[in-house]
Image (cartoon, rainbow, N blue to C red):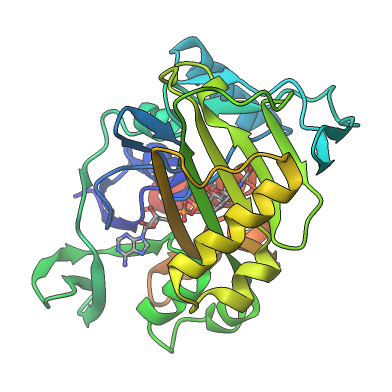
Length: 330
Ligand code: FAD
């Protein structure tokens, strides 16, 4: 009888784990959102498309490059942008020193890679895991309303470290490492426009006290042509303002955007803000993954290794290597 494994989260880590384990075990992925991809997030509003989480990623390891090539061939990934200059003021751009390395985006949206990886996996969307109840030789999963979601031999969480720490029991051997990992927040401003602004770049880092990065999202491959901007705040500024009134946050980000680009976007037809309480890894857990063989519980994600899409993939791949071995030994 194959083992049953519950994976919490359908971001890149959860999907990597699911894909690797699906031939050896009965795998069910639980995802609280409707869409897949976690922080590789996209949304469509009023014919505008915004990737409001990760903007692009690189592939430095052989294994990740293999996945990237496979997804490129399937049309789920594309290269973008060619350069990321630094914007210091209106029309002032410092050239990008790292143009040699390919950067990738999901196609036709950032969620493209997750949707590609999800094929053939059993995923229960819009299902938030609220608690784990210990049973003889396994775990019963419950949603936030205490509804029974089934019994599983093993449970792997890929939720950001603070959320995983709350879900897994205190007895979990990885609790100290979970507490060690630190993620910082971020605000993302989404601006939908009538006409494309002449900014002179597809994406730029921003030298500013409030903003860190902006992308002309509509220049990414496969997106609708309607001009759309995605603007990230700095993490330290977000941390100081996470509980602030969101219209005040929006106004401060628009004012900073005006001072850096010279354009007042306040009359744009679409303005929206997304608040990420756990966006970027400030301090990783320092272990490639966490696994407690006695409790049959594990955890992985970017927060184990570093602040990158590829780190989430590597963390899940390392945990999958171990679980594959354990499952093969029976
Ligand atoms: P996640 O993507 O967070 O996946 C975890 C999943 O678990 C989520 O889907 C969540 O909904 C789900 N979940 C959580 N709790 C529960 C629960 N109780 N029940 C069910 N499901 C649950 N990386 C780059 O490489 N390049 C970038 O340019 C970049 N920019 C970024 C900008 C922003 C604003 C943000 C937020 C992130 C950025 N990152 C970037 C980081 C990158 O997005 C992450 O490293 C990567 O996506 C993490 O993947 P993951 O699978 O580990 O976690």
